[in-house]
Image (cartoon, rainbow, N blue to C red; front, side, top):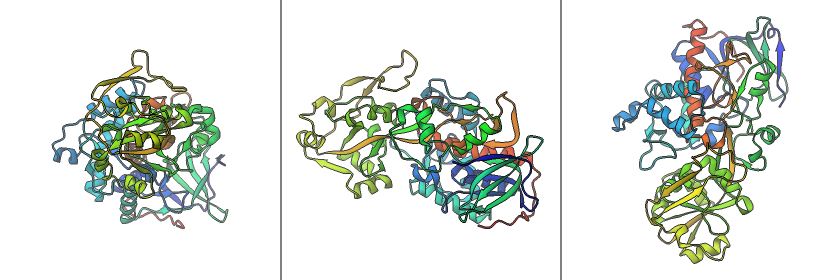
Length: 485
C-alpha cells in the first residue's frame, strides 16, 4: 500500500469532473448511476483491468425492504422491520444513524436500479438467511455476485459514465481550505495521471487483504484464509487517517464458516438453514448453525485442524443445486456422498458419529463461547435450535474452513455518507461508503447480518450520490473532461 495525501491542487492540466469515484464495485457503480440520473457528471476510477472486487466474489444477494418486487410477490416488509433485524443481530451495537439511513434507502436504490437501468431483481424464497424475519434477499437471475456486477457494468456503459480501469489511485489532493480537490492515479506503465473534482467518493476498499492490519485489528482472523479481493488493502483508511478522519467499528467483519477446502469455493449457508449441520473431525456438532455464517468462521477455526464438515441429505442437496456457486463446487469434487453414518465417519476420519449429531428432532443447546470470539452480552450466550426435519441417508458432506471475506469497519461517516473528522464535524466534499466506511454490523463478527456488505455498498452508493448531487450543480451537457480508458 503506497498512498499519500498531497497538500495543494492537482496539476493545472488535469481534467476536471464534478464527482470522482474511487472504486467500481457495487457501491461505486450504484453511485455513478444515481449521479447520472441526477444529471451530474462523474468518473469511475478502478484499480483492476476488469471491475469485480468484493461484489463479484460475493453471493450477490442484496437485502432490501419495501421494494416493488417484494410487493408484487405479496411479501410484507418495511424499513423499520429491516432496521430492527439489523440491530437484533448486532445486539443494538450497530451505528443507529446508518441503520436507519440504509434501511430506508436500500429499497429505493433497488427499485431505481430496476426501473431506470433495467437491472432485473427477484427475491429468494423458500428459506430465510440468519437473522432475517422475512424474505428480502434480492438477486439478479444469475444468483451470483459476478452476475450482479455484469448487470451494473452494462448499465453504466449504457449511460456513458467514464470508467477508467487499471487506474490505481495513489494520491489524494487537499486544498488549503481543507477541501478534497482531486486524486492522482497510477497507470500500468508507472506514470501518474490526475483528475480534479468538486466531490470525491471513496467506494474502494476495506482492509481484509492487508495482513498487517488484520493481525493487529482482527487477531482471531490472523491465520484465516482470506477469501476476499486483494484490493482490500486499507488505503481508504490510510487516506482518512492522513486527513484527520475518525475511524469506527474496526473490529467488525464478515467471516464465513463454509469455505470449501482445498477447492477454495463458497458453500451456501442455505444448507445449514434448511437442516444441515456442521461436524468437527471428532464427528461432533459444536455450535448452533442458524445463528449466522459470519461467527461460524470463528467456531470452525476453533475446531481441530481448523476445519469442519457440512453435512446434509438429498432433500437439501436439491436446494443447494439451485445455486450456481454450489454447482461449481460440486463439479470440482467438493461434495462427497456417503451411503450411511458409518461411511460418513470414515470420510471424516472419526470412530463414529452420534445419531443425535445428524438425525434428531430434539432441541440442542450450544454455547457460543469459542476461543477468540468476542461474545454478545451476558444472557445471550446460549442458543437453541429445533431441527426442521430428520436428515436421511445417503448423506452429503463438504470439508470447510473458516474464512475472512471483508471488513465492516472503516472511515466514520454521517447519515449522508460524509466522512467525519476526529472532532465529529463532517468533510463537506469527502464521502465514503461500502468497504471504505464503517458498516452496520457493530464492532464484532457476530454483528454481521447476512447481506450487510452489499446493503452498505448499494444503499451507501445511493446516499453518497444524493449528497454529491446536492453539493454540485447538475449539468445537462456531457463533461468536457477526457479520460484514457
